[in-house]
Image: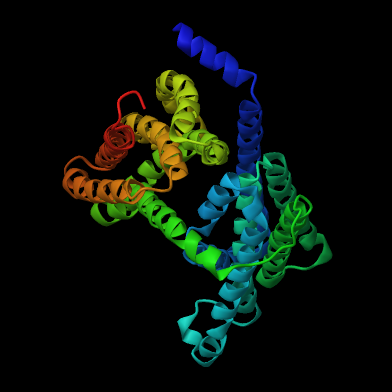
Amino acid sequence: MSVLHARSLRRLASSEFVRQVSETYLTRLFVVALGFVNSILVTRILGPEGRGLFAVANTLSATGVQLGNLGLQSSNTYYASRDSRAVPVLLGNSLVVSAACGIAIFAVLPLLQLRPEIAPIRGTLLVLTLLAVPAGLASLLLQNLLIGTRQIHAYNVIDLTTRVLAVLLIAATAPLGLVSPEMIFTLVLATVVLGAVWSYYRLKAQLHDPVGWSLQTLRECLPYGLRAYTGSLFIFLVLKSDIVLITYLRGAVETGYYSIAVGLADILLMLPTVVGTILFPKLSAAPDLATRWQLVRRVLNVMVPATPVGLLLTYFAAGPLIRLAYGVSFEPSTAAVGWLLPGVGCYAINAILMNFLASCGMPLVVVYSPFVALLVNVCANLWLVPRIGFVGASISSSLAYALMLLMSILYIRYRLFRVPNA
């Protein structure tokens, strides 16, 4: 290990940054475990039909939040990090946007009641699902303000506490005889509302000015948010389009094999995602480009050499883990993992660079690089999957992730740092 890497490692190991990353990463792992427990409880309590209705309601509400946020969660973190004086207005705007989203959604309720065949769910469950959209949006926007104001511990405590509470409340429904999709969804919704309210009062307690709102500020935040929103959408499609294409081109069996590789990749990518989340507000608060790049280089000096080591260990452990967890019948998934790991490494490094670019005002490269990668991924899948099966999807994904990383590097090198030794 070089002297530079050793120094960077020592600085990071003793920093608040590592403590926040470790705490957030462990929280995310625990949240994943809670989600698994929650899924088992809901399935056992509600049975197949009830579980299906709950899943539809959950999916619709999550989709509503995803479509309705317009990237404002990213702009909240960005602008709160840059100027703490903006937080009262950002907080007020978050509440106004969430309320406006709720009003817009409930405006379509009479139509859904007149034409019930349009909605896959009806009655009380439909109303609860509509309520969950503005509540979930408020929770998302306010939690990102917590990140922007560096209240990482509060963010983790609120997230973890509400999810534990949801599991406990759901577990209590069966002994009490409160078994219905509506009741289970109400309990989950209550914890989402609790998280939003808790986040609001946590933020409000740190403010010196009263909470307000500004249409002008909202207009200024939207261009940044929309770029983040569009870029995130394209990245999501790059990550998930493979499953659809394999199902269409090769059938459900090979989709099942590939889904194991994707699930493992999601777990591996959790750490760089957390690192980027904690790093982003620090970068946004930095006074100039040189300072931001210096912070990024400290992280990259550790991540770049550590990532291949982690991927190599995963490569040798993947086969035994898959056989142990899923059985010998899923052993073909190991080949997909091997070809997907280089792409995972590229994605992990690019996640840091994308947060750096986002802290520089969200240049258009954060939108067009995942868009180009999506086109390459789809075209490569259409050519490779019919010929070599689901392993072709792993190759396609690795090519797409490598292309995104290359485009980020070229942009940083030849656009941001056009001046020598910047």
